[in-house]
Length: 368
Image (cartoon, rainbow, N blue to C red; front, top):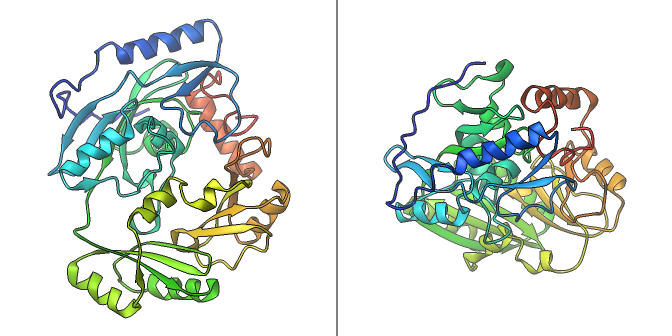
C-alpha cells in the first residue's frame, strides 16, 4: 500500500473552529473496542440519508463531533474539512469567497454532514455539466475495518491494489470505512444566471437537449416534467443573454433548482413510491405507468409508480441504466443488483479494507 503525503496543514480557516484534538482519537477508540468485542458499527453523521439502502443492525458510531475546516485556500480552489462538519456550514464559508461545491449535493435535512455527502455520493442538477462528487474528491482520511487511520490521495492517486481509494469512498455508504476527513476541489460561482421555462413535449425537449449538448452553450441544469422544460443558464453575461434571447422562454424562480435538489417540489411531496432511475441522457421514455421528472438533461429520472421492483429494473436496464429505491421498505434490494463479476470486485475490495464487515454490514447488499 502506498500512502500519499498530506498537503493539508492543521491551522483552521476560522479561529475557534477547530474541534477537540481527541475527536478522531475517540472514533478510533470506539472502533478498536468494537473490533475487540467482534461487534459491527453503523456510521452516522447528520442521519439525513439513513432512508437510503438496507437497514443496518449494529451499534451507532457518530461523526458529528469531528467537525471543522482543516484548511481552505480560496486561491488554490481546495478545501480540507472534517467529516462531521455540517454541509450547510461548509457551503456558507465557500459562498463568502464566491465559491461553491459544483456538484450541488442534496442535503435532505439541516443536519447533513460532509462525510454523509461523500458516502452517499449524490449530486444535484449541475452534475452533467460540472461533474459528480467523485470528480472533485482529491483525498481522504479513513479509518479502515482493521482500525487503522490512513490518508489516501494527494499527488499520488493510486493506493490499495491499484485502486483510487479516495474516490472509491464516494457512494460506498460507509461500507468500506469511516471517513474522517476529505479534501475537495471547489469552483468559483458563476457571475451571471438566468432561469427559464419552455412549454414543449418530452420528445422535443430531449431532441433540443441532444442538439445543445453538442454545442458550447452556457447550460448548467435542465429538467422536464408536466410538458415544461426548465433551464438554468450560467456563465459570461454575453453568452447567457445570447442563448436566453434565442430560447425566448419565461423567467422562473431561481429557487426551483434548490427545491428540485432537496425534493421539495410538489411532485416529491405527493404520496407515491419513489425511484431514482439513471439512464443514458438521450434515452427514450420509460414505458412504465406513473409520474416522472427528467433531471440531468434526461439522464436522471425520478419515477413514482406502483410497479414491482422487477418490472422497473427490467425497463430501466433495457435503456442501459439502473434503478434505486428512494422510498424505504419497498424492496429488500434498494440498490440495483450488480452483475456477478462486478459484485466479486466489490467483495474483494471490502475484504481488503473491512475484512470483518465492521462497518455498515448489508447497507448496500445483503452479502456486502
